[in-house]
Image (cartoon, rainbow, N blue to C red; front, top):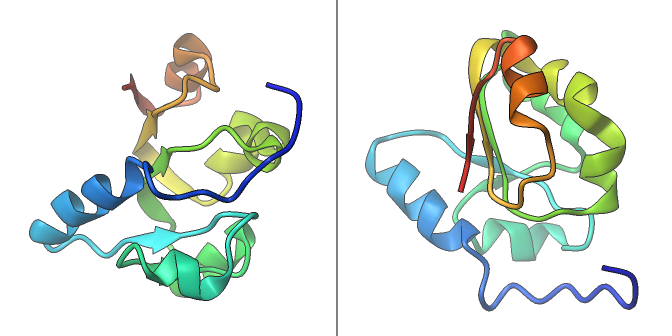
Length: 114
């Protein structure tokens, strides 16, 4: 969708996802190029300054990524960029259907689209 991009989180599916993961004791990190650190932390996650910072916290990589918004920054990373900080066999949940499932599975992800 072309046009004005607004950082409106009122109907974000991320809140429920984070709450569910936290109930299972999963440590959740978050990054959104349109939100300030305080807004990201308002979701109950550990805010990252950028996606590459995840390696500072998880040197062995992360077990999964949930992409809840279709920002150009995520599209620009592509699956190759995302796979750089994920462990082999990691889970990729693609809420907005930005990535191709076949390509994700070829790269070794356990891929699901919501």
